[in-house]
Length: 107
Length: 136
Image (cartoon, rainbow over the protein chains, first blue to last red):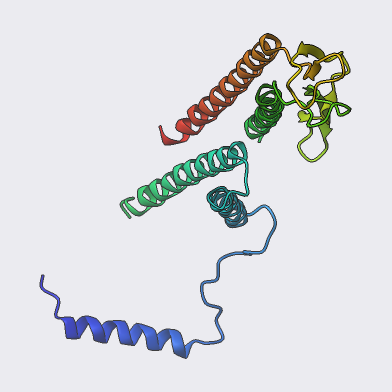
């Protein structure tokens, strides 16, 4: 079945208007994002933490180039950054895989 | 994380050993440094010290290099009347550095550093293998 672009645009517009007309009804808000212990929170914290570790590694590398840091500290920081990045990438892959398996569920 | 703690402790050991190497290098480099005058003293051998210290933030005992102390043993006397640092009898005070001892100290520092490297390598690979579980 071929769908005309114009028809699709019209359908999209009508849905958008429906949403705009029904302002009092709360839109689909993610449930309690600020709640402690939520999964979102956990992810945000983990990502923030890993970004901090990566930045520390970068900073130490820059210091070493400038001749201000010990090579051992640089190795330690870069190692920590590498492991953190590895962990974050693995967790992200897992989350994306879970999301995809939900999206592929036949409804 | 625990593995990063052990890596930091190993890094502190490596830092302490490199400080020790610095002292040993100073001793070897100055093995023939005499004083410019007859009354002065030649280079005095330094002894590197390390001490353990509890790091509250890390919750682990790390190694720290302490202040180098002077080796108070006697200076070697060498007969060299032409030297400006020679005394009335023609003897020059030479530093109390024994290069054999320094070489042995250097070996020890080297081995210690290698041991710390091995600890670092092992803890890193343990951590990496654990993260690999996530990837499946």
